[in-house]
Image (cartoon, rainbow, N blue to C red):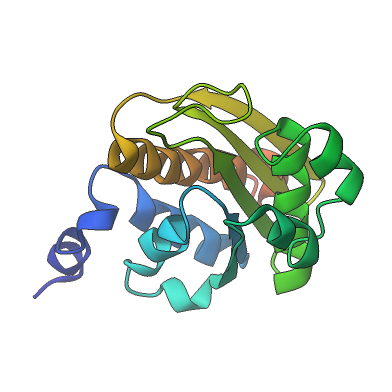
Length: 182
């Protein structure tokens, strides 16, 4: 079995550039950790589906319950009380918490509503993706469609693509790797 066929044998890695992400993180000498609510560990499992992921995946926090977003990931009580668990500021603090608590270069967070019902005024498919890395923090609001599974796997795959974009940014390359030919 080749490395390519072993990656494609994992259904979580299909349709997402997960092997590219693991390769990019490895090449950059960087690591990742997750804080996941609606995906409940799906993002970490997706990354772990690639051979060699142990070199880059530090771990993850499954913070499905709101109180765990505070106690495990360090989201402030004030943010949770005023903005709620499905919010941009919550996703940002989850990403920073994953990065800090797991000792990783990158923290990735997913919080949102997979359905079947709306939650706290947020429509099904509303997802906030937080990314925190070296000198870089960003949050995106996603509007995903489909059933619970489709929303959850789409969120995980979007997180993989967006983290790959961030890792490949020129200012994230290790010294001496400026992407220019000699």
